[in-house]
Length: 181
Image (cartoon, rainbow, N blue to C red; front, side, top):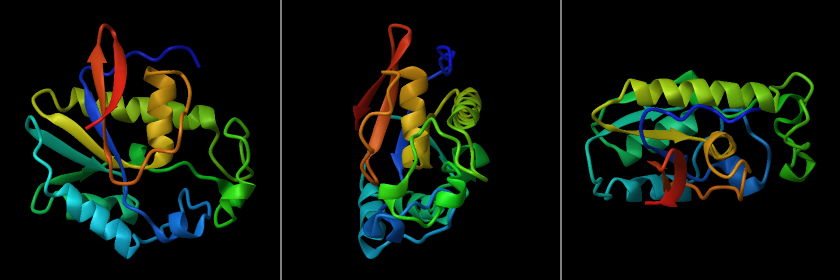
């Protein structure tokens, strides 16, 4: 994929809190799995964070992202966005993480990496355009964060992002720089 046009503004990505699938090391892209007690605690800790500017909160429609957003931002409006969902791993859903195919391979009955990159690019650019006066904070998944890295930072997926940790993708000198908030 060629270099993607930058979003119109900086944005923050937060991977949902720990889930039962994370704890059990199984693939749960589009499988709806709940947060663990530790995951709920991680999300609640986010509610104590002081944000440097007004924020607009978006979340994947998956329950793990919605629950993280509700616990992290109690009483605030959360807009669900289908483009922030995790990748569909097809026949690999529910299998051990060690069985996960190469990212560039398209799993049977699953979503291709290219299609996911395109979906994430459209979603994040659209959210940023719709949030000109507030920092978009997107509660999403590891795959979405990795796609953003490929699209706009190093061109590499990098390490699996930590659960419930805000990652700022800040526009600087016509590129995005990722930093932990």
